[in-house]
Image (cartoon, rainbow, N blue to C red; front, side):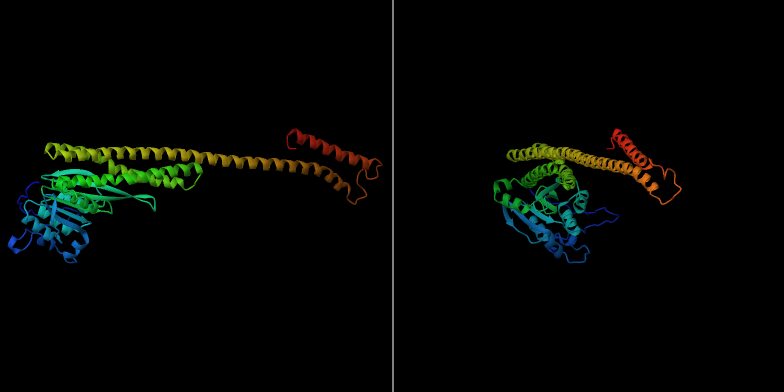
Length: 391
């Protein structure tokens, strides 16, 4: 484990939206601890209140064994100075600006990394600032009840004798990571690099339940697509968006881990730790390939669903057209019979009028002629309509 070096206290400035904050220099060790000055930044509440809400856990380790559990950042800084060969592991969840500035002043964190940790919503990346590594990870967990993927963001500062985790979101469960490392003192005594490996391993292992849940969702979607569920299109779109987010979380990790492995080899990190890191890289590659496959599968399912919907719409339009054709045929028949019956009705109506001066009124053959005329007209109309397939 690297020995803690005495660091000058830098002024910490964070440039964001035109404002600048500068942490005052630390007081002497006789006056108290080095965290008091940054925590004295004007705020609506006292410095102790934010720590209770955002400092999840802080601990000091020596040779892989926990030797102290400070209750505040100030106590952590003081005890780490007293134990020069120790390592601090500080876990925070959605910390305040004052807390991050105090950490930056104590551990000489780069202002750009501090700004990223404050702002969050970063893509996975690996940056080196002097002796400090800054790692951004996107963790994920599968929620069974709503059947959706929840993403969290984790920022990790790794220095010669400290590890600082800044968590934005519920995932991952770093308490389990800390417990696992404390149960493996031989691994923990390898220093901050071992803690970084354990965090990476936890994040990558957390992808496995997500992959299983998404695979189950895709199987259900395929069943719903061929079952004609009208709501399946929306589910496909929502899952596709989640897979885009999942790709953004996993793809950069492949290159990040290869860079980290190269750094471990360059700085001659423990060989066993390098093997562990290679195993994590293999898992990330496998997960990334699965996510790419899921997105391709969802694209194909969406295409199939669009085709099936189009076929269903065409079938409905064809059924409507057939119904309209049948109605037209019925109307033709009704119109044809109406025309046939109209001819005798017209003749009978004319000669049924009560007038004495009508033509052929007193003609002896008038009645048979009228009947014959009506019959000829009706038969003629019948054959005309029959020829035109109206009857």
